[in-house]
Image (tube, rainbow, N blue to C red; front, side, top):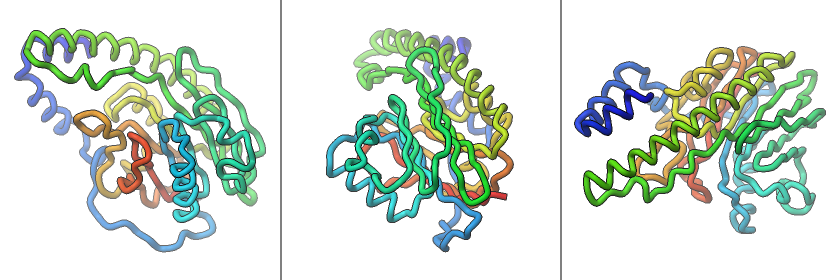
Length: 282
């Protein structure tokens, strides 16, 4: 990572070659898939999952729109990030007819009973929770995670001159290094909880990291990236900067078979897009 940033700083010509190298070294299916969505009704042993960073949506119009969307898509389990927890505290405010758990900036909403819930304390400004959901005779352990934000202002990506760009790049590099260091501690702690689960596992959230990161590959050691296995279309989930990136994920243990996964770019109440998936519980 240090070498990459040094090369970019020293010679901007490395940037296009670096991008090309990434796509040559890593499968493109982490980012894009071709094919049509399957709109057939799901079967009894299948689940529809949603993960969505809603960026503190608090406008009643946005919340009603999101509720209608969840009902329309018939979502079984929804994972939310950057929430106002008071949206869940009142049974009259948001998704009142469902089973809900919320801690700090994260929440999980389920069609099925939540029989256990726990806040996971992460160092820094990362957030996570764990809930057990009872579906018929099965128990599913669900993790909703939001790793440390990088706090990169869009103004840092504007530069009027090469000297200005180099100054911004130093600050970007410093923020990224600090963020990645915190992520490593946070994801290592979370992976211990995941490994200890006696039940099938779903891990959904905003990693604030791309699919070439330590955070991503740490989770991939024990879990499947559902979009990589069954994705349709483009996988970009965050679009607020000058280029879209993929930082929101659905991971599943081998008790699940990914049927399909896609990013819905028709929903724009946040600077993220929701990620939806259909999984078969084996």
